[in-house]
Image 1 (cartoon, rainbow, N blue to C red):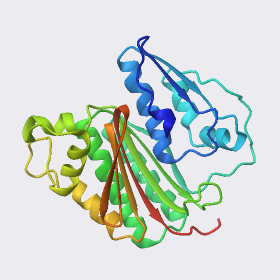
Image 2 (image 1 turned 30 degrees about the horizontal axis):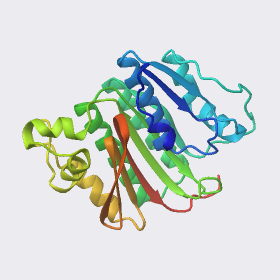
Image 3 (image 1 turned 90 degrees about the horizontal axis):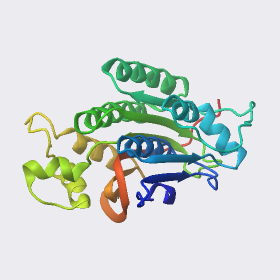
Image 4 (image 1 turned 180 degrees about the vertical axis):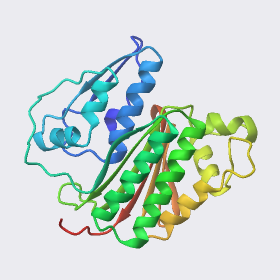
Length: 265
């Protein structure tokens, strides 16, 4: 994740260097896309270098990451060759959710992919609910957003199970909540949103969904939640929050992980 923590320099450039990466999680995929779009919105020059390791590079091609970069006008550097025999496990490829129709289409595709991958019912419902809630939250408070959902056998990732990640390049938790709830740090704002079930929209009917996300992760053995927003990354595991400082990440990423051993397809 270190490549995500490079703040803009005096020359207004952002270099996203993935050359040494051997495995990229869904969190990393959506975070890179959100970073690139956020930087471009601020008129920064953006450079992306693809992994040298062929399997990692092939994975990014197969899930639509490279195609989305090109569609957005970015031209990543790196070897173009990929392994055509490489098989991607059950996943929702990179989904750009800029409209309600795009959200609906991605939700349908995710439903069918989880069915095809024989994801256990208890996890199936949690992943679907979290994908909807995190996407709605990102679109309410941020901007167009990206979602990636991926099962992993753990062969490469060492994290067998389902990973869900949603990213936007909006203002972040603290900026959204300060107007209604007072001054607070980025880490405190993230925790407040999950613990106190507050909303930055002013709508009394909202603010409950993130608490549900927290509870869903807590009730799954070894489930893990991670939120990156501006200068903080907050993780939750075993019913406890942990905080760490990062360089200014221009956007918000929410990621959930539900461990289990997927069947071989």
